[in-house]
Image 1 (spheres, rainbow, N blue to C red):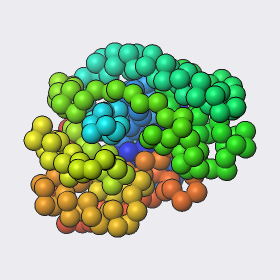
Image 2 (image 1 turned 60 degrees about the horizontal axis):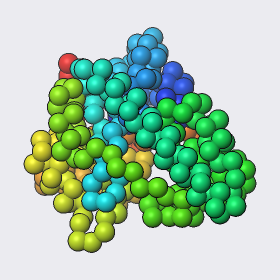
Image 3 (image 1 turned 135 degrees about the vertical axis):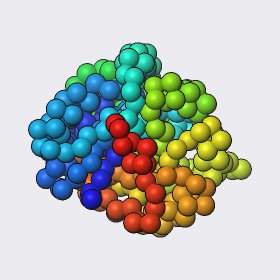
Image 4 (image 1 turned 90 degrees about the vertical axis):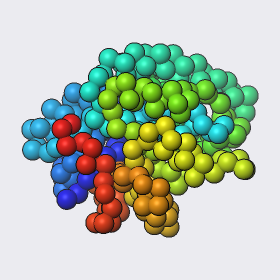
Length: 278
């Protein structure tokens, strides 16, 4: 069974509408899909309607921005049963994201790269979920860099010249939020995080586990093969259920389309065990 529990749409920083993402997943043979836009549930209704029309199982999801160890990490809430708190959170964070975007633009202004806020806003379609990725797309569009990855490496990476540190909710706050909304908590793409010594991703996962965390993404489009193998072992050793997702944002060289990430090993217990009624 082909599963993808981590995709993005234009409701946050993805390229395609929620319905278009669902159709792409269906075309790739995905049977179980979760839309997990950043800090918003605004695309779920459209995605669910399309998935039901195509005979797919659809799971509601949200990827929460969380501050831990001086870095931004992501914790996915799958199958929440209460949605109003997410709408309230989205409204609150949209103002925070807009302020961050304007500060990023001012840093680009200081480097002689002008009007990035306006261009990023146009690419985002609205100011509710402006992200670093929209700035990266703007830089590619204007020819300042050749790829999104280059934009992040040169300007937008953590501690890069256009980086703006943002304080999101803490891990305990995020876990409490997910529990109160009856979601299932999953650490997204754990192999992607680089913390300043002595902190490690295992430290993060130990705290996540102690707070009642349910699962980690084991195979994901944001991991290299070696990281998929490593987090297979970590899930087994630490007693996490396994999740999987393409982390699809749009057609991007070297990144899988919905459902085309490496599948989970058959012997791993999966997060679907907790989502049977969602």
